[in-house]
Image (cartoon, rainbow, N blue to C red; front, side, top):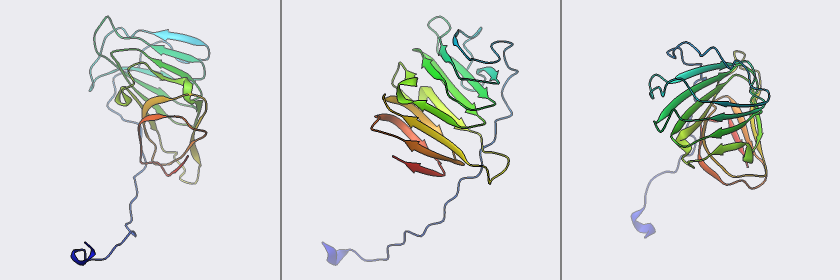
Length: 177
């Protein structure tokens, strides 16, 4: 009952996420591929671990990238894209992927294919621009439903249409649905 509720409601709580920078503790990148502009399938040479994943450095990720597990092992992969993300990603069972990107992301929901439907197995990290005045965005258009997580403290995130999202969008500059 209201008679037992007292206090003050204060929704004026300042909260800011610091800019996100590319981690510096990743191993040296694999020699290939260095870009994905068509259909590419990779199976890492080793399964890696959560703390030491197999690492790929890509100048472009605009094609279709399929990431396979090493045998039946849990496989850990980190990918750094030094440009915009416009790719179709297909994450197979037993694969855990972290994708770091420097630019913007513009995809359809169906392009985010995470076979396990476990959002933690496909994680996107938007590297904050060096110039804070630079606008960064993540646009996800219909059709398609997907499972992924996003950490984008400097980006404006827009989900168009009515995709079903399994996961979280944490730390975005703004979110529109």
